[in-house]
Amino acid sequence: MNLQELERIAARLVAEHKGLLAADESNSTIEKRFKGIGVTSSETTRRAYREMLFTTPGVEKFISGVILYDETLRQKTKEDVPFADYLGRRGMIPGIKVDKGTKPLAGSPTEKITEGLDGLQERLQEYYRLGARFAKWRAVIEVAAEIPTEYCLRANAQALARYAALCQEVGLVPIVEPEVLMDGAHTLERCADISSATLKIVFDELYTHRVALEGILLKPNMVISGMQCPRQADVAEVARETVAVLKRYVPAAVPGIAFLSGGQSAELATAHLNAMNALGHFPWKLSFSYGRALQAAALEAWRGREANWGAGQKAFSQRAHCNSSACAGAYTAQMEKVA
Ligand code: 13P
Image 1: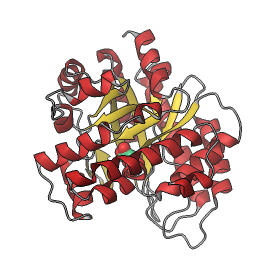
Image 2: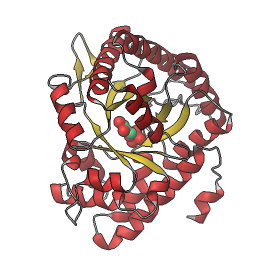
Image 3: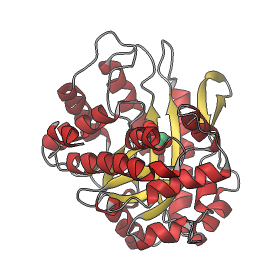
Image 4: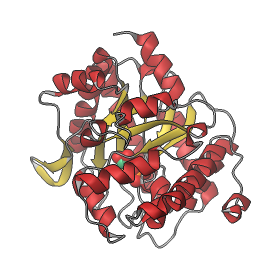
């Protein structure tokens, strides 16, 4: 393992004022997103949409890296330049989602386990050859009356740690993503408890699997009220609780924490990140790795038409800019009005 190189890549991914674009929707997920705007999902439309995002003028000021899906890593721009090369030339590091999605967990089938470990080493080697320099694996933790079980947390943490160890061996920075879902009526306090238990087990397994924490990034959920919870915690509470949980359970050796947006509105995801960074300095960088919160407005503006590329890119650039400011605690609601 070349730890220095992993550290260098991780540091670039969470460089000042920068965060990640998660554009790694599987074909079934992007189909759902396209359906929302009346666009048929095909290899052609998926390629065109991703090209629109990646070629946004000036966006490299805000975006350090882009997480791609297998198909996208193999696609090219209209000028026949592989997306990975194109992004690299613009200073944005290409990454790759390597998990194969979730299945019901044997023995506790209302919970989920993430699959994709079989043959992973060979796939990682190929992704490296194709230009990827970091990877992502997402574990999904659902919250309800009797779940998550300790068994589910442990099984998912073991898979995450095994994936992370393999990535580091191949030279890819692993993004370790344990997502406690915001679906449900649970309170902020319960989200804090489950997020704490999750992170504790994840780091326990990372140690066991000899993963070098200096060469990973963590991609967690924020500590937030369940979507159906009658009392929604405000921005200040979410920021305070999220930071409190992270301080207790994320070692200072981890260079950066890049949040997922998880179904929050684009504006709220930005406001939460901003409020955390306004609280002061932390041992790790606090940044973003948003999918929906960076793309929703761009998708809506694009609607599958090449004539709307400019509008789509403007919408994406605006969100990237706002989140870049939020990395420094310098985002203001005024920035939304300018848009
Ligand atoms: P969201 O920001 O839409 O949650 O997506 C981030 C991601 O990469 C999920 O794995």
